[in-house]
Length: 167
View 1 (tube, rainbow, N blue to C red):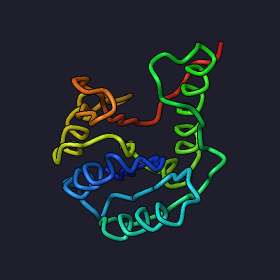
View 2 (view 1 turned 120 degrees about the vertical axis):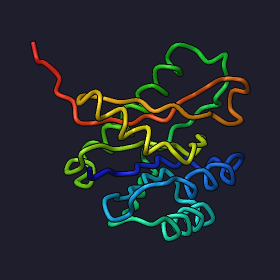
View 3 (view 1 turned 90 degrees about the vertical axis):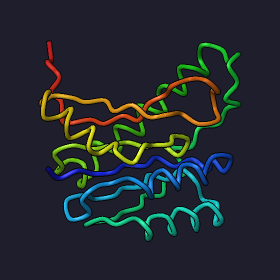
C-alpha cells in the first residue's frame, strides 16, 4: 500500500519538539511512503526547522509546499465568535483540499495527516493499515493532542480516497 504522510505546519513552536519526536518515531516502510509538508509560514527560522525535519524523515519522495496565503489569523481563543470559528473550519478544509489536490496524494492508496500540534504514537501506520483492511472507504486513526486543549483526546486523520455522490 502506497501512503503519504501529510503534515500541515503552522509555526507552532510551543509543541514542535513533541511533534517532531512523534513523527520521527513513526514506524512505516519508507519504500512505499511519500512525505508532503504544507507550510503556511515564511519565517526563515521555521522553514529551517521544517526542512531539517523533512530531511531527517525516511521516505520515497519528499516535497515541501510553502504557501503563506494559507495562514489563518486569529487568537485560538475558545470565546471566538461564529464567523471566527467558521473561518478556522474553512481554513482547515482548504488545507485538506490542497493535500487532496497534490499529485503525491492523488496517486496514493491512503494518506495520513499529522498537524504540527499532534503527537502520533509510533504504531499509527500499523493501525491505519489494519483499519483500511477492514473498511476500504475511510479510516481515522486516533492519537493524543498535546498542549492546546489539556485533557482532550484529539486525533490524527487518515483518509483514503472517497467518492461523494452528487445529487
